[in-house]
Length: 273
Image (tube, rainbow, N blue to C red; front, side, top):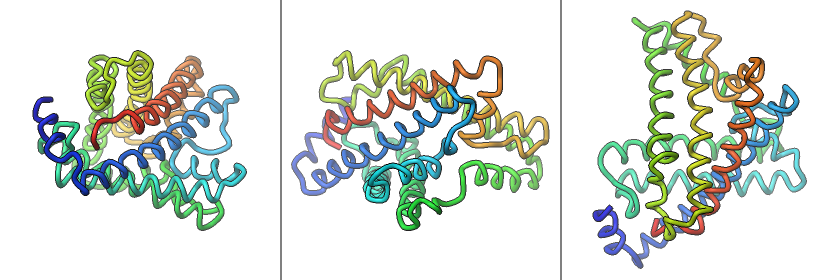
């Protein structure tokens, strides 16, 4: 924390810091919109047993496209997510003045940059085509990747390990942010009860979705049924079909919506980005 404060004081006011800060805040708005739409789709699935679009970046883009002024909105979200990708690529190289910047964090930010770039391209593709083409679904990409790994030596067990890694990451997020509230260190008002509650609830319940996805991937490896390895949308659909699933989906939907609200708060209240 002290090291982060020193870095912040050393770069604050520099042109590079100003641009990084603007990219981060603009990018967090797009991240907020993405999670809010995912929350609405998950809630629709919980209440109706089906949703108009799959709960993925492609599904969120298609959902926005169907709204009034959908195409302009898609371009805005695409630009925002691209800004987020550029910012995270920059922090992977130069570090972050707010957060720790050891090798593990920098590697994670590099991965995030690639993920956000993929989201940005998905929204841009939907905007270009008027929503008719937003790229391949998260389910098909997950199943295709899993099918490839199944063909490797020890492939089934690598799939199991990947599923367990996703679950482990979810537990890490729950402990670090929902329990310990580490995200508050990024804010100018780390003791604001409303923002802290949004962050704890958002991080905690959103992580339940990762547990569901990781569980499906691991079970696909254990059973040898590669078609069971589905992404977020498939995990939520399978959960909806379980007797206890609707309540879990409502919680996950609430987590996405709450996390989206937290991202808006962080865009406004984050210390130097």
